[in-house]
Length: 291
Image (cartoon, rainbow, N blue to C red):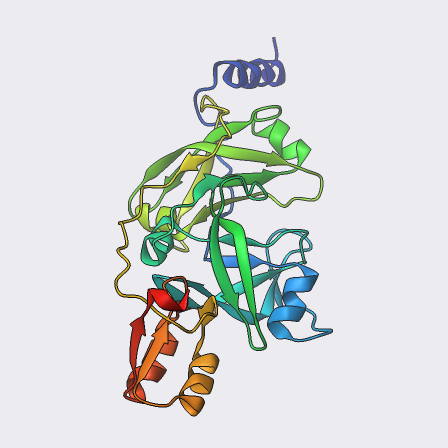
């Protein structure tokens, strides 16, 4: 029995039992994805003006995907995340991908879903240069995944495998379990994790990742993120908009009589809007009668 036959049999055995590294000598690219949004045509025009289009800043590792020149702000009743990246190309549905840490900051409790699966997704507002989008059911924590072409999936012993493990050799070596395997002729090989996961393994430019044969569960169902702290609403309000931004705060101040801004309980006042009111020495109060 020659060496090639032995290697073929060994690879098949590893694939069937789901243990061991599939290729000890070849690491795979691993990248950390920062918080970002995917937008629709309608959302782009609302956020950046009629006829607006995404401007390409640079290409990403996956063919056809790119970082746009535009940036947005993500807002919830609990806070905001400024300068959030927009990725192209445009999609059929708005999708906001945040880390679990981001979600705790915003007091959101979205599911951990495969990208594109918006079942149970949380709500937020997206603010652009020209407008605001009420992005209901858009926020998820994206599940870690690996992109492979069919021939690479075969070479790594992962053809037909729904999930695998990834060993990261870094400042804090770690093995990630249940990494979703995504296979397409249009992909470039890469493992994608978010910043929480990257921090957990102290990922840096010298880190190396290796695919492990997939004994991991193929369960691709949603996983609920840890519950956010309960937020208690205090006081009532009267300005009835769903969202008061920095721009609308200036408009309110310009026409305001007195030093108190009454807003309804359902109205969201962004932190930057609050700063505007504070600088103008205006007090914001909530009044149920305004609902």
